Every structure is written in structure tokens, then in C-alpha cells.
Length: 568
Ligand code: DON
Image (tube, rainbow, N blue to C red; front, side, top):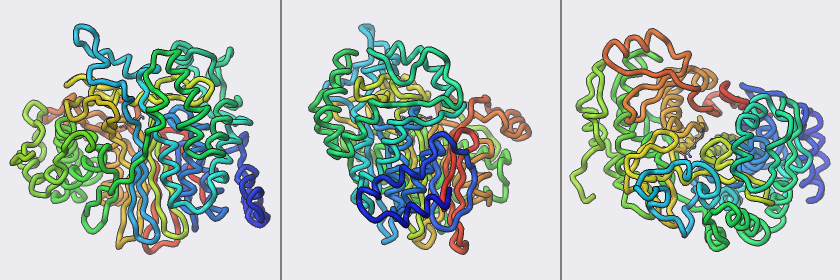
């Protein structure tokens, strides 16, 4: 296979030939899941082997890390329909070889007809099925606008980057066991929440190795290839989306689609013991909360306490509690609410937040509220590093598995259910148990608060890690733990990702742990009064490391899913 790919480069003489080649090197029916790789030049790690392969082929054909990230995202929209998407949104954080740091926000927005109380019944009760299921749950998709915003930093033509996705949708690919199980378990939802047949339902249950073909999606991707972002936000695709909205009592209009814009933002940048951390600003809460949590633990001897020691875990839990309390109170789309970012991330403020922390004495969410100032006031991640020193971290989402489970009619792609990331009513938990208030209330055109935390770590202005994860509310705490695992506890990238994780989000006031979390730590924390609950796997983290002194890139895909690394 390596031979075929190299041959591909050698014969890439015309534009038409180049556009075809990524396709020739893909193996849609014969691929393996490669968890950990060590390569010399470029690496891609994502939730699906074929998507990582698509990105890696693009790197080998002269693309940079941004090209590879675009191709990987487009392939994920086909091979990982539960979270990869063109009907959702996401965030991209990158460090470019010329030293620039960028953040692209392509989060969904609320439709113009959305309103603060749109998910309340006549008695004022929240009806979260409406914000989670079907047509009304969808925000205006941002992914396609985001991909074109990223093209500014790419090197290859878009037609080449989208070629693998079109092939995989048009001709199909063999699905994994995990995908077969998921498609089967969502069959009733696909039937209930669509106005016509979809590619995701067939008479017999799906089995590993079955071919998933998505002809309508292939057609939409071809329109995007030919017409650019207008192939999605205008013309046939836009009309298909709106026609489906009319059939299913949704509210997205042609004007909503036409007006959608991705935004370049300034990344959240902070220092942690000599490392520079670059991560996503609002409307993701991820960067601010990560900066808060790292700032709150920085002065404690956490490495000395040891990985998964009761002391280290308790300290991290207490930092998480405080950051999530602030999240619920203050954070929302900065275009709509004034967020006191500087105060929330101020070192003195973070130290004050920890003033009532006592090692091995349990905190309580009744006692810990959001901080006070002296007032004025199914997601998926991919990481790429290339040979030139560019690093990209992208987290993108439909929100729940398969989003709203509603396909945009003839356009053939799944719509997100991101509206549930707004606070539909103060204090009412969303599907991840997160609560919020007016800062994150619904308003037309507003972006719903996110937890997605694509992150890059720099040392002497060179990228040393690119990482991120899905997991709803657990995203920020997974990135937090993975960072401390490598920076403080000295774990390898694979261990940092795969070792059991824990999570605290202020409300409910308990520590969630994965089933294999060490019993001795669980018992020690229970003994001092913490409530602990075992839960389903936390996160699916993708990480790439380039140690400054090493010639190699180490990429690791999380063992919790089909995550797979590729590179050369
Ligand atoms: O933006 C957010 O924070 C959520 N919509 C992310 C959802 C997610 O991670 C689902 N994956 N497990």
C-alpha cells in the first residue's frame, strides 16, 4: 500500500489526475484500525481509519496539516455519520509553521425564528425531546463554511480534498462492528424522525462488513466541490434542507442558510509551566474552563502526589467543580452576552477560587457557587501534524449520536441537534446534565455554548502536542486530564489517552469514574465523603506528540472506539 501511494505522487502531473489520486489509494473494504503509530513526516488521528487514511494520503500528496484536516473531516462526514458531519458544526485550532496561531469558529447558530422559550410547553415546562430530536433541534449547520474558511491556510485545491469523501459516499465502504451496532440501535429513531427513507435503515440488521452507500450525500458533496460553500448554503442543497424543514415542522429558512458565516477568533492562549497552551475561545467554554482548571492546579505538587492518587484526583475534581460552576453562570456567545473572560482567567481570581480547597477534604456544590467579581461586570476530534511544523486540532459535532437523527431530505446528510446545547430554561439540565442561565439562553442568530476543546501545546513556539476529544460535558475534563497526564505525570501519549478517566461538572455533585478506574482511589475518596458513580466510557481522545528532541511523531487513537492513526 505504501508503494501505491508513492506511485500516486509520481504520476500526479495534471490537475485532473491529482484530484483523482487520493481516491486510488483508499481501501474502503480492506482497512485496519491502527491505534498507535510512530512516523517521521506527518500523522493524522481521527475516529475512523478511512478518514485518517484520507488525511494521510493528502499529506503524502503535498498537502499541509490544514489540507489533511479538511480532507479528514469531509471523509468523517461519510464514514462516521454518528458525529462526522456537514450538517453540524465545529472548531479548528491551529499553529502554522510561520508562527501564526488561529482559531476558526463554525459553531451552529439558532435560526431567525428561534426564541428563548421555544422548547417550553404551555405550563412553562422544558420539553427537551424537542431540543434533542428531529427537525426543531437543528441549528444552522456551520461545518461547510468552516471548511472554506480553513481553505485560506490550505495548499491543495478543494476538489482534491473532497475527492475521498465523494468516493466513499458514492461507492460505499465496509462498516465496522461499532457502526453496525450503533445504526441498529438508532433504527427506530431514524424511522420516527424522518419524513422519508434514509441510507441508514435497511430491512435486515446491519452487520460488520456491510457496505454503506450514501448516494444523496455524494451528490451534495459534488455540489459543494463544484460550487464551493454556495453548493451547500444556496441552490439545490439549501432548497432540500428547507423542504425537509417544511415537511417536519422545522424552522430553518433559505435566508438563515444564506446568512451563516464562520468566524475567525483569537485562540485562548495561556502558559503552564513553560508550555504555551492554545485552545478554543467562546462560544466554546472549553478554552476558558481549561485555562481555569490548569491555573487552579498549577501551584500544587500534583506530580509528586502521583497519577490517579486520591490527592491528585481530588484536587482536579475541585478545580473542575469550580470551573463548571462559573461556566453555568457566565459563559455564552460573546456576540450576545458580555462575558468577563479576563476576570474568570485572572491568576489572582483562580487562586481565590481555591482558597477554600483543603487537600483530602471534600468540597460541595451547595457551598461552591460561581465566583464573584468586583463587578463591572456526538462529536468527534481529529489531530494532524505535518513535516513542516503545522499542527491542527479540530473538534466537530452533530451533538448527540447522529444528531437530530433527521436527514436533510434529498440532501442526504444528518442534521445536528445542537439547539440542546442552549440552556432551554434556567437550571434545566441538557442532554449532558449541564445547566445554564440567561448567558446561554436561546436568541435568533446566537451560537449555543459548547464544551469542545481542540488544543495545541507549544514549547519554544514549536507544536509538541495536538489533542482533543468528544464527550459532551466531559470534553473539557478529558482534555484537562490528558494534558496533566503528559505534562505532569509523564505518561506516553497512548497511556495518557487510554488510562481510565474521571469527571466532575459541579452539578450533579458527584465524581463520575470509568469502570476500570482504580478501586483504591475510589475507596479513599468515598471514605472522605465524595459520592462516586461509575459511568460509560469518557471521551475518545486523539493525540499527536512531537517531542522537540525526537525525529518522530507519535500518534494515538483512543482505544474506546474505532479511532485510528495514519501517517508516513
Ligand atoms: O458542543 C458541545 O459541547 C457538545 N455539542 C458536544 C457533544 C459531544 O461531545 C457528543 N459526543 N459524545
